[in-house]
Structure formats: C-alpha cells, structure tokens
Image 1 (cartoon, rainbow, N blue to C red):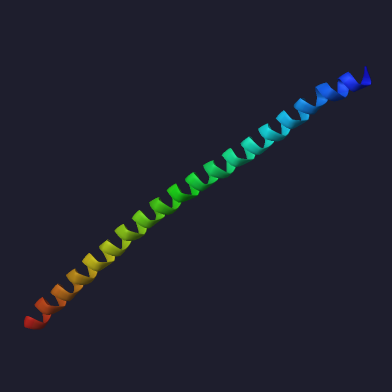
Image 2: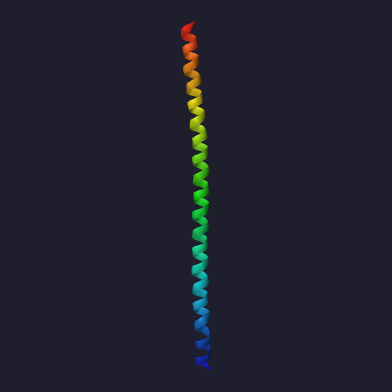
Length: 70
C-alpha cells in the first residue's frame, strides 16, 4: 500500500515542478514584454521632447535674427 502511494506521488511531484517552472517562465516573459513596452514608450516620449526643444531653439534663433536686423 505504501509503495502504491509513493508511485502515485512521483508524477504529482513532477507535474507540480513542471507547472511551477512554466508559471515562473511565463511571469519572466511577461515582465520582459512589459518592460520593453515601457522602454519603447519612454523612448518615443523623449524623442518628442527633444524635437520640441529643437523646434523651440530654432524659433529662438530666428527671433534673435529678426531682432538684430531691426
């Protein structure tokens, strides 16, 4: 009887290990995907900010030229 319980417990322990590993891998994959999404969005926002700064700088240079010509 004890041997039968042990034989039945082995697949259960193996399945638990497989399930635990699968869950851990899925969490890691989802974390990587989420982190990459956040980084991509941050990069886009930084690009927009720098473009705005460049446009503002160009406007300042043009305005300075207009003021100097007066």
